[in-house]
Image (cartoon, rainbow, N blue to C red; front, side):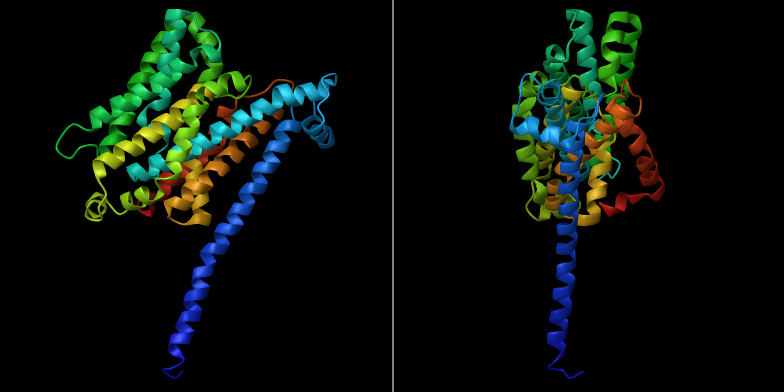
Length: 352
């Protein structure tokens, strides 16, 4: 090969290499969009009684208040599906941000003790104030999640190095264990709290509608917008604190901002649907197959992918135990536990 043709060959090779990630991202985006649409349609059509898709379309485009199937779709299944999408988006983003800010591939919103803080606040509301409905203890759950996040940050910030990823993980695990013990103690001591809490505690979309979603919607919208804007920050975190600082990132302040976003998103989602495990852990890893390590793409793909997975799991939860249903948190735990074990065995911390 002559010297004058070498640069042209190099450019062709570089062009081909550059198009591969773009094709992968486009294919991944198409798969996620199709999966989300299919999951939402199935959520509207599948339940105690199956409803044909043409009836679903009629209910959405020409609602007849005298038609029982239309009533079930518009007043019951549609709000539940929208709640599932909103909660899935929040937990997917929260998981991606948590993994990015801690540089820990096993991180999810639970690493900050957020779910346990929300659960403790709800139990306290039930015991002290006699709360019985999700719409009543919504703000208790959100406040508990925020308090847990602040407490974990305060504990991890002690010392000269500040809130390092390892200290955040250790503080989160310790706080989560302590809060879980307090919740268990309160539930054992109070039978009413145990009966009221048992379905919320495993995570569920059953009975969740706009009355529960709307109070948390501002936090979900603000948290989602903020999470989608910090992709570059998380990319710098992936290089290590020293390199990120050398490139102009204020590490302490940036970690505080990312932690606050995780608290807002996971706290609001937990308040709406209860503590749902593994979703924030599994989805960011799954979308990396299409996006690569760039957190700008990971965040953008994690939101709809988590929504699709949560809504699909909710559909499965309705059909596996007909005429009753299983809580969606149990279905996700069954799906997520093998992935969690595989991540531990493969030791993929260096991949982040």
